[in-house]
Length: 639
Image (cartoon, rainbow, N blue to C red; front, side, top):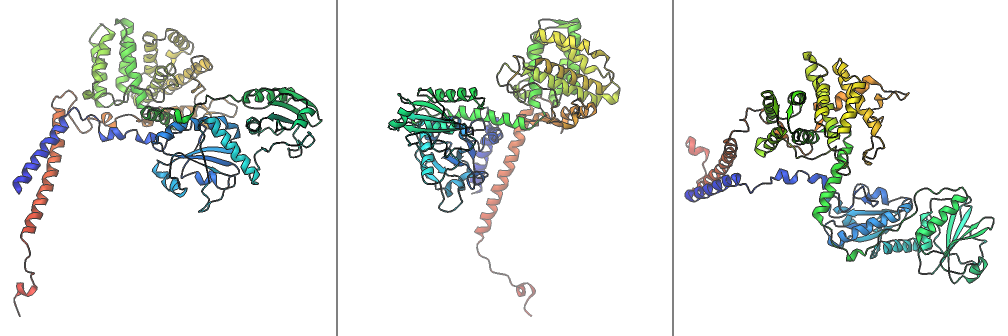
């Protein structure tokens, strides 16, 4: 038996060590779960959609005792039908956005474990399930909402919603909605009877009984208290004759003074909306918002199931973007490393020959990076390699630097802790933000940290600004931008800065000047408009009551924002940043990875050996069987 255990033990140990050495086991559990939290609980809808996301945390607050009604989809995000259905539900929410104050379009993700009790309580047995909850809905064991048959497309969803509202009004509810009853009187005398007292005009729509056009228009204009929208059918011939309506459909305006004007006989919702807006504008009544536009209609049952991998990747990107925005004025290691790599690989790396003043500018730039860039141990060694490489030559080729960076990007070098991607500097399109944003952030960081660490040593307080000026003059790819910066630097007397605090403030002031000049420019990212930094919202103390800057507070804010303790590590492998703190061998030791593997393997072997030893002892104990119980008199002798 011990021999068999020994054989098993050896087999497991060898297999484990081979697994550790295998190049096929690329993804660790840590890597697989790294970004999972970014997509948890997101489902098929996001904050970008007009669908209101409901769940166990807000469902009761939104549904019970609310003055508006709700049409809610209960779905499972991995259900193929739900994936096909979602675009039509989003389209409905956008289409009836003007009705939001009366009825909400919501969704509950039943695949989210947190929402399981909610979906169970409302007896959701299939997906998607649509339920209507009328206004002032009350909680109770039998109050589970009214199940509604889903339409085949966005138009049918909207029509079914209107049918629900009409039925609610017939049953005495839905009083917050405009009246959706047909106007059956043969004259217009009663049109204003149920209208608000301040309603000046009524719009009467003649339509076929199968049409929902008038109901849609009435709900579209529900916020305009100056008007009332009603409809009648084409069988109300007496009223048609009285108003001289000869074609169906038709839109007629009627004033409280009984003035009548035929506006249009079109069949589209957009045409009716435009006609009403133009009429009201002529009466000096402005309707906010835009004319309703018909969204493309596709039957969801015929649509293809979305690519869920692509969907989840997009959702991950959106969730990360929102998370970064909420974090406020912080800097990210990923942006700093990405701008450094681009700077050295592309801008410096694309220079054919670097000599004289240009080489001096590169040397100053690398010197600042080597002293103050937030790298780990091997990153600092990498920058020192470049520094030493430059110092030994009177000229170099840019390709030499590019090759050094590419070599440093090898995983075993453990120089870079992040992929080469933008995080806070990511624009809404690839043509926006990116490298210029990252370069500003990096030099802000360098001015603040040079002041922290070099100020006490009496170094030149212009050292970062001089390095920045030299870099932008000789390496920055945008020639016009470089020219503007140099002109601004001369005008603002960059070389006369005399203190560390002034160097920080000089760069801040220069950056705001550039922001002001580029605000509204075609190069500005519409999702990230340029403003004078920091904003009043981010730093109220930085702004005086007369809208001038409180400079001491601005300086404190900058020192905090761009300090090393304010760097965030989303997407960074912090193990690389902290390598070497325990005296580990350097990256170029060929045996290091083997010894690390053996170390892990030995830990595993010891664990298995301990387990097997425990099993052997238990079996040996059980084999000894029952032993006679020992009493005290057996030990002490009989008295």
